[in-house]
View 1 (cartoon, helix red, strand yellow):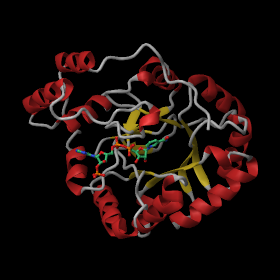
View 2 (view 1 turned 120 degrees about the vertical axis):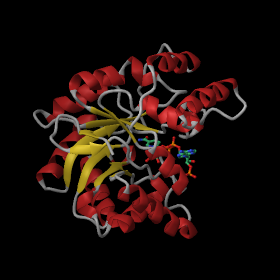
View 3 (view 1 turned 90 degrees about the vertical axis):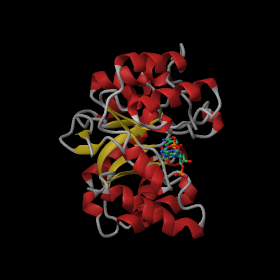
View 4 (view 1 turned 180 degrees about the vertical axis):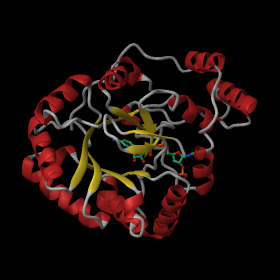
Length: 291
Ligand SMILES: NC(=O)c1ccc[n+]([C@@H]2O[C@H](COP(=O)([O-])OP(=O)(O)OC[C@H]3O[C@@H](n4cnc5c(N)ncnc54)[C@H](OP(=O)(O)O)[C@@H]3O)[C@@H](O)[C@H]2O)c1
């Protein structure tokens, strides 16, 4: 595994973590999901991302089971829903998350989306309180634009925001226009979600380039040169950026193995240029969306 510092902290986190959206939805898949998470952890993917919203707490329960006997080895990230971003809302949410996760602390607690109802300052005030109480180690946000990060940081004062989790993949390069350079300059870790583009369609994502499409054929050809797959090329391309980690979700162990093999080699500059020509950067940056 390759590690990098979380934000401006001294904590090392793996550049490849494990997402858990869609986990915990089906009781019959629980064993397989726990097995997948444990396989990933045994192979260095000890950064686990979950959220109270996933399967209405079901994903956190799966994570709680999976990390029971190795909590200290795990860097655990979970998120408070935008709907729960009042002072008391966050307190209630964190208590429920801790119980489902069967732990006494969260390593990185994120505001899941900008809230349509509550000021960022109110949410950050309670996040700082949770750190003082020892329930949370580091504070982060998700789907935040630079302007909103500034608002959050202004409230936090000397306590630095450690991370902004945002969507990033070949078909969605918007963060390159605003969030990525901003976070790199400020020393805030960018945690790339949906690295294969599988987030819901309303986020503007299209899924992974389909076999037979012009883009996929070109990616497959390029991957073959390295003895890799198109998915590995896509992940390797994402992880070339400084200050960025990625959290693919995979339930299938062959997928986890494949994702691990996206590390430890480099695309040539020429191939990066070709990829970026095939999947051009749009003009706009990540927009502000509140929920
Ligand atoms: N903060 C936010 O608002 C937000 C939004 C979306 C996601 N997230 C986080 O980011 C994580 C990842 O994003 P995501 O779940 O949307 O999508 P993703 O990681 O882009 O894609 C997941 C899909 O890709 C498949 N897959 C994984 N590795 C593969 C490989 N090597 N080859 C072929 N297929 C592969 C998985 O299949 P199998 O499962 O069958 O193996 C699954 O269907 C989430 O789970 C969640 O933790 C955060």
